[in-house]
Length: 327
Image (tube, rainbow, N blue to C red; front, side, top):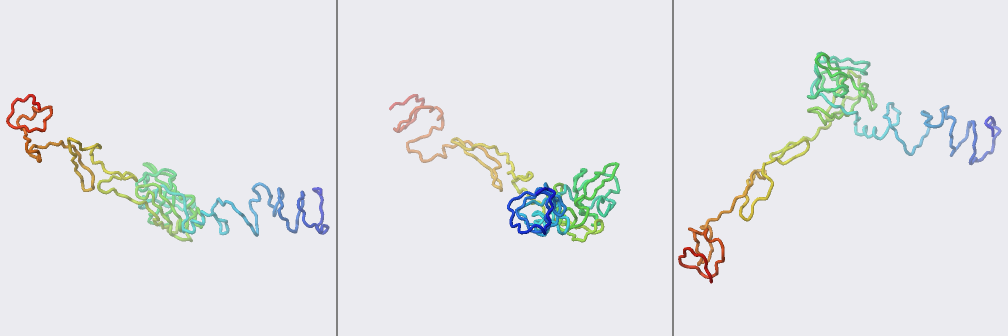
């Protein structure tokens, strides 16, 4: 069959099954083809091959596996598991913010841009901006949630930090300047983690206002979702960041007590040693009892007995200047 041959369908009958054939420039206008590998041509005028067709209309599609990388933007878009998990929990996760306001920002003027896109908050006076006791940096994402006019609340990016000769400028973040059900739009259930600041660090917040929302007109309300667990060190403990330590009582490490001394300790109400020492053993003769009846104690010059062996025989009488005693 040549590439230029044209055979009317009315002239072809009783083909049966063609198990393996090659054909170029063939137009199939009816019937069913199965197990066919198509390396070129088009489907509904969309080229086939590589990553095409990029779009197409299919009445039935079966896929064993695959990945949907993007979030849906229209009502009939395919969604991925991450998006479904967020919806099932009523939460739409957004990029985290470095800071979140605790009180209203210094006096400012709001400009709604183009229906919220490019909207700004510009300070009425010059001065460097700090949020939650933290100086801002250009590019920081800031959750603004305490404005007197709740319609000005939202997520902003720091465009200008402000200073002695300039006001601060905040611009609505590109993932939070339009309303809708998309992952990067304003809707109820929008979740934000705060990573910095004095009060709000490691807290998370969720936007509560449902659609319909008109950016710059509808109040946006953010409610705290979670907060870090706070610990405090009790008596006898120190807390450094997330680590507890036993308070130092200044008692030196070592061994106490021995053959010629006893150990003495002081213990506080928490069971900690606050003092430790060795005390020498000193026993007076009056404190010694249970000696044999024949024993006597020389209390006047006992130091003169420096060596030798005392036999088991009884010593009696008075002795002066004894230099040696034999059996």
